Length: 248
Ligand SMILES: *[C@@H]1O[C@H](CO)[C@@H](O)[C@H](O)[C@H]1NC(C)=O
Ligand SMILES: *[C@@H]1O[C@H](CO)[C@@H](O)[C@H](O)[C@H]1NC(C)=O
Ligand SMILES: *[C@@H]1O[C@H](CO)[C@@H](O)[C@H](O)[C@H]1NC(C)=O
Ligand SMILES: *[C@@H]1O[C@H](CO)[C@@H](O)[C@H](O)[C@H]1NC(C)=O
Image: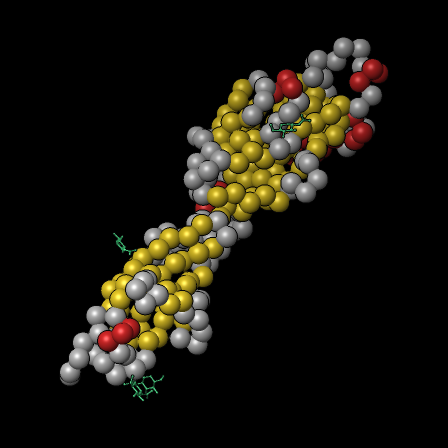
């Protein structure tokens, strides 16, 4: 792939490169970028919002006679097998952001926490926050990058229930249940509702595939069977009615 001058990718790389190369000449201790300990790996639920927390502090401020501080901020997303993708930037006083993203605080607060709204599974990845602080002469007085890994989890989408086989007395049938989407992968449970309620376990139940094998059917096994697809961020249900017939 050929990167054309002026694409977001090349300008991003240029800014990062300039940031890094100017850094070398200056004391690293001038500024420090912080991510709260333990929050460099976040999980959030699809459809909700998440805040990626980050802020910077300046050291030895008293040694600067009223330095006007000009931050260059870039939040970008790295995903496996993809080019880094700029999410939000503040460069030369101009804020550029993708829809649904915003800074939580004003940039002058030095808190550069990023809010991501209406999360989708595809928003998962490593978010890197790059801050390059310059003084009013355009000299870098500190640069740092911190990363936060975000994993967007998906509650199981409504599963579909189906009956496989023809339910005559004495035969076998399999009830199937499948949720089209969930992260992490859903586990399945089957139960028969009242009046003769029953919860099923292995080997009849395959909690990974969502199947329930009913053998040697009897009239008493007729009823409404409910499947629950579940992961740690939610669940969804479907049901199928079993009518066991006599004769063949
Ligand atoms: C920066 O903002 C985030 C999100 O509002 C917050 O959790 C964090 O405590 C703030 N940091 C500081 C140093 O105030
Ligand atoms: C029904 O299932 C039982 C137990 O798994 C098996 O022994 C039997 O052969 C099956 N019957 C039919 C008709 O498939
Ligand atoms: C199937 O069920 C009937 C009555 O419910 C029973 O008599 C029979 O032994 C069962 N067959 C098997 C193979 O379990
Ligand atoms: C079975 O599923 C249907 C829709 O799929 C729903 O309207 C109904 O309430 C469910 N019944 C039970 C007993 O869960």
